[in-house]
Length: 168
Image (cartoon, rainbow, N blue to C red; front, side, top):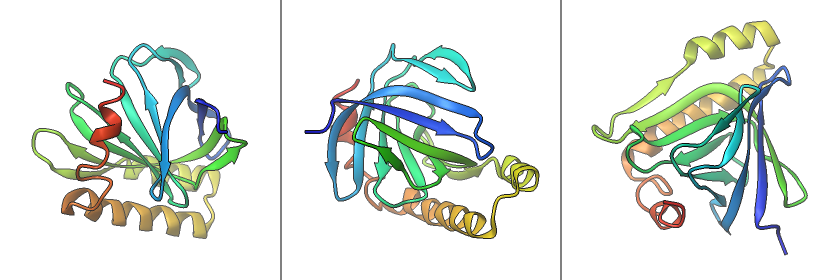
């Protein structure tokens, strides 16, 4: 039986800390593992202690080069996807991801979908020597997400709402 609590660990490509927090396993389906993070959850962000002010649900896909964060109001991003290496699970209790800088975001009020942090991606690609295959996969994931967040592709249309309702 999988653990109820999953530790989510994001690092940058050079191994430095990015995000680290506990989440509650909500479900697993054909899309991936759904994790809930309630407000008040203690976390680490860029190596510094933090507390999550707004709850969210994280989808860790089984094979994708991304994760999806689904947010309630008042957060201005309804969906925030980090481009990351495919998840590496340590048992059922810990998931490791390498954040690859690029983000695809859908804004709540306007439904505008945007690609963010291309400059950071280019800088880190040069500094840390992202291999060509990593660059290709990251850019392909970003292109796919740009379409999927705008065209009603699940889980980005409505299916996430049932999981988000469990943590708000």
